[in-house]
Image (cartoon, rainbow, N blue to C red; front, side, top):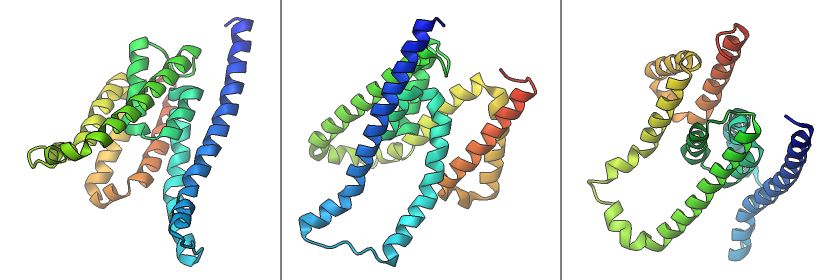
Length: 227
């Protein structure tokens, strides 16, 4: 990489982090302000009693660890710009990640490269715009489409959309990196088969399995089994 490219990339990363941090803080303020806005609209007071803090702590315990793991896991794949956009707009696993993986596979880019940075950002942005437009159309057509969506014939299909999406995404990834995925997949199948109740603790199990997968990948890398 030439000196000019290195300087251009450093400048891009600096600007992207500055704008991304500002956007994240701004969006967090907006989201956290929603209860206060609703309370102000209806003229109600929010009581910060023990019940409030207990619920707040429970949510933090459940979601903060998984959010940290998601940033560490997905940032190299998404790129700097893609990471900020994805975590602001949401739906990473079922929308953003599949879009990025498909775009990078078609473009032939690798995580950590400047080319991947561009492809990842474009893919995430395109996914976010498509999602917003789709939701807008859905809101406008929800009333006339309600009888169709609630049709008993179609209802079972909606319950398996996420599973089908993860299956297709997982199959592609497993076939590309069989050495990395074989142990975590077998271990996950055994754990959930022996303790089916863990399926209700998805957020926690995602963190556990991500940690196991990362540890297994590092071990294979140190032994020279993978590049």
